[in-house]
Length: 255
Image (cartoon, rainbow, N blue to C red; front, side, top):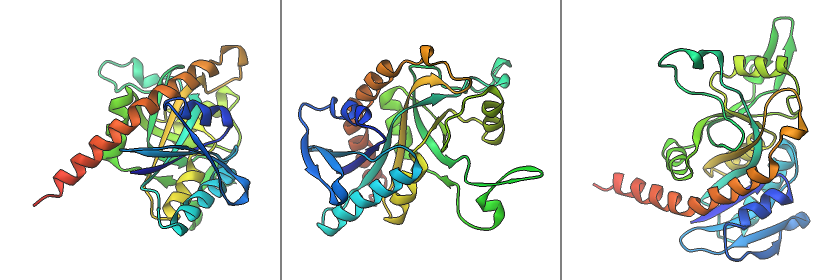
């Protein structure tokens, strides 16, 4: 199984590679450096594509096209890195309420990859492009893959929103939480990665380890080192989770 892992920055890429004993280096068209973790059973190519959805989409599309042209296309794309976690909603205090929110140090696997700010401001508030009659704002990863990876990593699963501007206020946090019920995390690349993967017909996942709380910016409370270490731990479990999920899918399709 060949998997393309796309991060924003080199520190995230290196955290992914740290899960393996060795990483080879290659260069993609456009000068993108690629780190390669050989399989079997799962071979990872890890790309730091840049910050934001546009850079993520461009880097992902380049890697997917290069692989397809060599006759060795990828089987899966994973958007991976650190991100901000949403605090629990007010309903969590009610008996029997489903847990939500993602505390610092936790891991989230997206069951929905959402473009949070792709649309227009109107007198009635924000309107996503889908309400304007074009585009899309949502990708849903395969449920079985989400469950397998989340279970192996001890992660929560729920919506992860992609933003072009990191949230820095309580008001914006509340607005996003209201617009996207159950949202667990925000990051800046997942939707761009998902758009490129969809264009190539390749399944996608998004995995985030939580370095900070979404809301008013307090850099002193961020735990970037711990989140990067957690990312390494996730990728230690990923090959086994993907192998198990693939085996289960094959068995379910047997006559």
